[in-house]
Length: 243
Length: 249
Image (cartoon, rainbow over all chains, first blue to last red):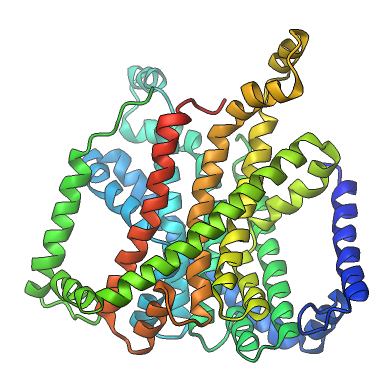
């Protein structure tokens, strides 16, 4: 990929940002300068780093649990079809609710600590991975399955040798969508009620109408999420090289 | 064409879930703090029906306005980017990266800019639907077959005709996917905007129910959010079945 146009575009956006502030004399409480935002983060690096670390750990923990649950359920559903017919409508119904609507429930059930955030992250990812895995596992056509069966492969053999490898690209798509949703769910949950975390830092700054530190929190959350996503993409490329 | 899924299993599941929630939950003595019986939830919902209707309508208006503006501008920007390669190469990676970051956190900035007004929620719903629709439009227009385009051109078709008769129909199935993602993001954005403070809306009611730990009310609002999320989604699916029934290539 050619990085030049993207670099120019990002530099252009930053220049436009600075220019708008200079031209229209935008006050700092409306739009702080990019450099001021960076300075605000660097003045208190411990606060932002520890907040983002907690948020990331909660997101990763919930993401791993939710993804494993969704993947496992999908495999079970392929092995026992009645389970699929019974549970998929429930899964679609629950996943049609915006997951942030469950945040108050998670906070009442699990308290203001990390458990409620992990639960929300798991909820945000489980159905995406479940439905994507299910679609992926059904991708091999009848003829390929019949061929393996005629060579004496059992149900588990077909699952392991044909359906799982064929499903992995779809699973990876589900994981990527799911990770973004997990991070969002954790940050919004932290805004509503938490002792720490980047979402809580952003929320506190918003309540105090402190635009500079809202921007600082949002910038750290953005950088952290980009990093998390990059790690996931790198892991995917290593593990699922055939997609 | 794909066969229509049978409605028997979903309906049967719905009946079982409703019956279990209504009768089995009190029978098993499940702590109402975790799951109150459906009869309690329904009674609570009826007791606040005027607030509920007002909140539902307000959140719906915020979602719909934000989504309409966001998808129209998203579509327009997507078309411009798809036809100006240098812009696409410069901005598509940024737009794609924007989908992996919690852009909803920028809602805090929007609230500082516009205060606790309806405009703040509309703006959040707007930019949340803008990103997926723009990316879907660019991706959809990219899949247009160059040979078919050249064929049409050699028969003297104008750029406008090529766009309306070839490019747009090719892109529409993907654009529909973007619209469906966009509308659910819009709703989430409107609700989160209300979390920061307001007087009317489902998000406001959710916050109040959280502060007073009213679990039945939280369930009422979860169901309300589900219905609010399903209506625009179902409308889009109907539009898709009626007018965009062909598949992406």
